[in-house]
Image 1 (cartoon, rainbow, N blue to C red):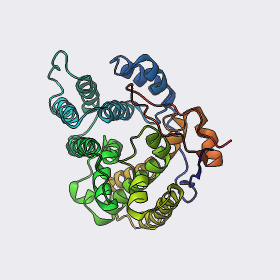
Image 2 (image 1 turned 120 degrees about the horizontal axis):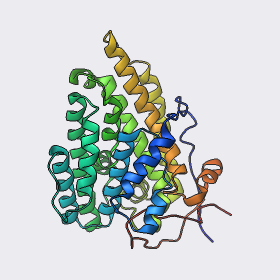
Image 3 (image 1 turned 45 degrees about the vertical axis):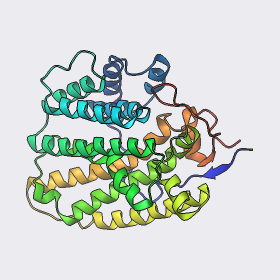
Image 4 (image 1 turned 90 degrees about the horizontal axis):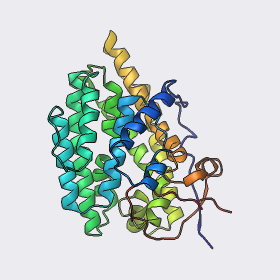
Length: 334
């Protein structure tokens, strides 16, 4: 009989209600067609990918798709190949007007087109921050590939150091300021920095809890907080989930209190900062919603899982044969 686990309600104390951009549906199809044109996935995997829903406009959608392509390909590649992929993407971002070489890994052209489109509508302030955060994300993912190759399981602290890069959240937050010119000294304010750090960790916790079943079933759970906690603290899976849930609750309370302490600088800058920070808060909640609705982690039953928060652990097996999402069909406790 399958082991049953109970998932926490990550939205229970989150103060930012869900909002969906009214242009989502039109942009969604446009960006899905663009991604499909690269033929980065097998037909079966592309069909699963097309079911994903992304609740942001075109450039942000394209970034999510770039993340997805790199994530799926890097998960199934050795360290040297992942480092090559990192170099390809960074070169495309730094030289978006340079044609990509024939026969190059497809991620380079995806990144190039995404960045050309984004640079046309964004500020230099944003572009500088985005390039820096993307380099951190890509290098962190290469480090993850090295850990995976060595079957190395980190302790909690060193895991979080790497995971804060591989989650890609800072680059996603950057997209909120595409049209903004918030100065570096404002972004370095201690309150802003702590709120960003909390938002990153809240996203990590929720993502790792909600993706754990899929990852352990495919044998790819070494880079997951639940596995790390189980190993370091000698806990069973439900105990590790409960530990992570309590940490999430504590961080949520801190975030809610700290948000009320965002400084004021005066003039239009205050509007930019408040708009950005509200976007950060909404992003944290949207990540949880996406995890249930995209079919990436719970197959067709994500909405049922969200309602019941009861889940059967899938049998551990390796489902790494093809590039693309793994649809988990039997993910509800019967």
